Image (cartoon, rainbow, N blue to C red):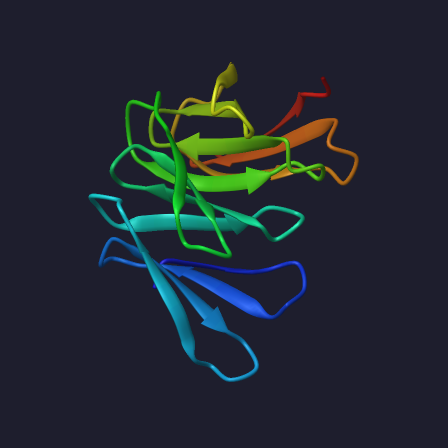
Length: 155
C-alpha cells in the first residue's frame, strides 16, 4: 500500500497500491467493497472529496483519475502532468482538486468538468504533498527542494 484515505464519514477507507488498483474497504467490518481499475502503474495518492462521493487517485502513470464512490465507475481522467503524480487533495468545497508531481508543478483542476484551471510553478524538485487550507483560499505544497510554498488560489 502506498496511500490511504478515510471517507468523510469514516465508514470507508480507500487504499492505493503497487498493483495499480484502488481498493475500497468497509471500515467497521474490514471487508473489501470493490476494486477500482484503470491506472496503468502504481497508485501513489488517494483522496476523498468532502462529500465522500468522489475519490481522486494519482499514479506513476502521470494521470489523476476521478471515481464515483457508490458505483466504482471512473468519472474522468485528468492529464497534463509530464511525470508521476505524488499527491492529490480536494478543496473544502470539492470543486477543485490539486495535484503535485515529479514534474515539479502543482496543477489545479475543475472537478465537475476535468479542465485544468492553473499550473503553479516554483519548486525546483518534485512536489510530494499538496493540501488546501480550511477556507480553500490557500494551497500548501511541499517539495523535495526543502520548501513549503503557500499559493493564493481562491477563485
